[in-house]
Image: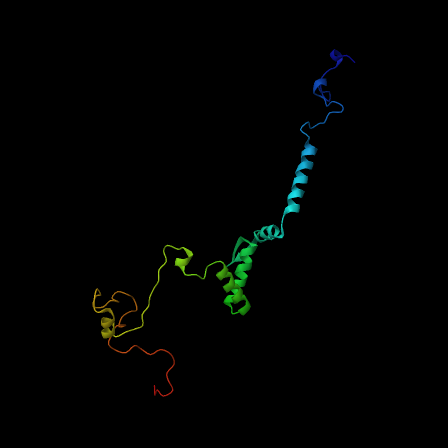
Length: 174
């Protein structure tokens, strides 16, 4: 059959664009590339440590319901929440686990030691009479009522003894 006798048409592609015998249909070597990629994945999987696998499992997101709302959360966060909830209900081993975890992560240190720049210390002194207060502060740089404006502080510096707290003593006739 001569080239000029060949008619191009339906189910008759041009001769020059047909697949050639003995030549791959994918000259880029698709099957070879897939084999190389598969071998690379297997090599990486063989090099993974137990820690790598554990980290991947703990970071997996799973659906959970919290306060009636559906959300996704990492498995590690779910585990920590569960242990903290158990500790909050009085489970002593869980409480010790949470305490140890907080200590290891540095959360039990005062904020200043953790590097928090906005930390401070609140000093609460016991209730005193006005004379004791003035004697302790030597009366300097304080207004007449230093607790003025603080809600619930009315009468804390009065001359009357502080109110007794707790159950009444047995010898009281109240």
